[in-house]
Image (cartoon, rainbow over all chains, first blue to last red; front, side):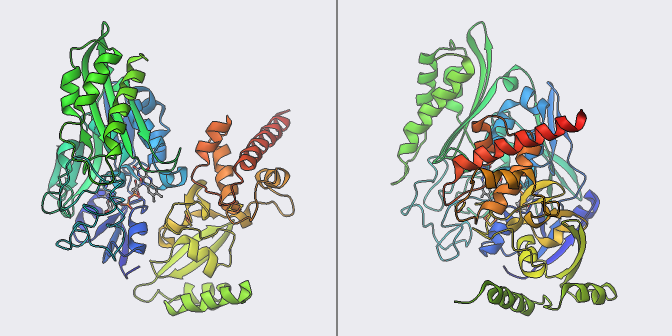
Length: 323
Length: 202
Ligand SMILES: Cc1cc2nc3c(=O)[nH]c(=O)nc-3n(C[C@H](O)[C@H](O)[C@H](O)COP(=O)(O)OP(=O)(O)OC[C@H]3O[C@@H](n4cnc5c(N)ncnc54)[C@H](O)[C@@H]3O)c2cc1C
Ligand code: FES
Ligand code: FES
């Protein structure tokens, strides 16, 4: 680990006044990557004990403050009842130990698990702009089908982010100048030619809360995660779905996928194929085919296309109560 | 081959080079209490297994290294050092965490419980006792982490079915594959603790 200075702050104004430095919340991404010297911050500003831990999950509205721990959000009965996809995504993330430490804000800001990014001996445009992408023509079994290109095909690793995209969530971002709300789907940026810029957060700006609107769709939501082992593993493919049914018809639906995109991937074509259709297996299968629109498989990850399609069907079938 | 003691004292000297003093802990605490830490170091007072300790440390030192190299508590093990195996699991303020991903400087004022602090004198904690009775280990390397994780798992009320226990214990890997006996031990300890709680109410 490279040398850094460390200061803990105990209030939001103090954190925002810090200006320079890297915010340190649960530390589970940072300490990991600092040990690998993938990240070498000069100054850590520890926001881990800021009093921003409130979790509100009424049927009408979800608001989770950024320093709430993953474990505490997952254990909230209101979250499970009114926004099940959020609780499920969290319970299928990392381990109980990590969830006790890690925060919601930190989770959304976690870095990719791409092995080229994680090794300073390898080329990676995300880590060292201009050094190339080792994965595009290299070992890319875990990499993205959507949103990538020769400069970068690293997936975004957060399960929570996928669930929140399916809820049309917004983030409250706060800086010394004030607050703004940004839809989560617009918060993340595609790698394009500058994969090192991952989101629209300004220097010194903090995520202070996650917000979503409740309702029948949010209450009927589900997260399905497919991985190499039963637990404590990142997604090969995951699907978050939220479904509003009326008289056996799909009134409205949201679908998002993880493990397949350079950012949490909204399956918009599949959604529009499903709206107004009967909630039947045939309709779900038809929509699932549309979820592959725009997919660009690499040499090692072609299996993810059929895996995604089947996971979409399985998720919708479970939500719609058909088999 | 070097004795474990030799290796530990070598590690202590090595960490001393990083600005971590190698003097005996008590003397250190007394001396340091009087002076402000030099630039770049931090004084961290915390409770470890019920005893107040003060560390003067570089902020890069993890809780795991502080326990093992500074406080001679080598029960918590270093497996992966990246949060991926659970061998370093300890309880901080009653919650299980990975000591390898915890910077010691963030533990100011907190209570740390390691495997060394679990038994009451010569009486083993019910989870320790159950691990013995169910033969829930082979080489023992993962065991201190498994035991603390199991203590938390039972406290979190996530020790119902075998499936639930497996999921709730999934942050602790066992290279020897003692999983079936670990699940049995968690159930035995859960039942022993429930029985004791009921006896206490009578
Ligand atoms: C072994 C292992 C397995 C894992 N498995 C999974 C998994 O299956 N699914 C999954 O989703 N995740 C997984 N993770 C990732 C884990 O969820 C993240 O490391 C964690 O959520 C990060 O949160 P933190 O509070 O510890 O962040 P930190 O490490 O403190 O910070 C991470 C980043 O976020 C920034 N940051 C933190 N808080 C804020 C804020 N409020 N505003 C702005 N910036 C902020 C920091 O500056 C830093 O850049 C795993 C991690 C490990 C180590
Ligand atoms: S040593 Fe900490 S999790 Fe492996
Ligand atoms: S007993 Fe050997 S690693 Fe678990």
